Image 1 (cartoon, helix red, strand yellow):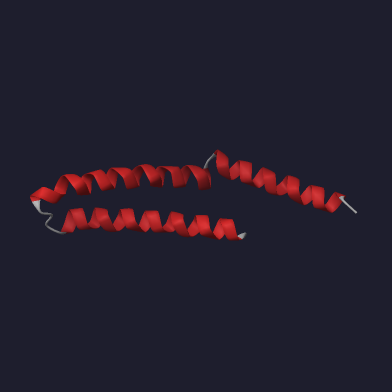
Image 2 (image 1 turned 60 degrees about the vertical axis):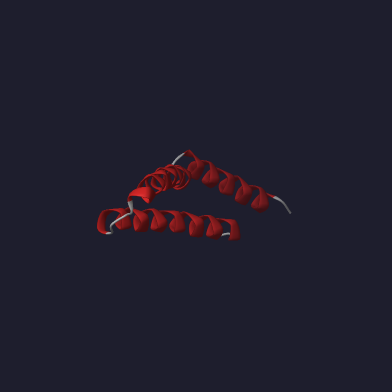
Amino acid sequence: MSRDGITSLIVAVGLVVTLAAITAALIFLRVPDGNEQALLLLIGALTANVGSVVGYFFGSSSSSRNKDDTIASLTTKGSP
């Protein structure tokens, strides 16, 4: 896996873990009334970003990345 791929994976895992932790905190901990709206806003933003992560790793971006890797390997094998 390339350095960019590892970086993307680390960011993706970080987003998913952060969303899970904040969701668990919302469920199991008492949130002060003044902070509840901010926490819900944060969960909404993280959920949107996790959706982007899923789209990147499992959607058309993944297929496009595989295609680019295949083309790159074919061009390097074909060159002298």
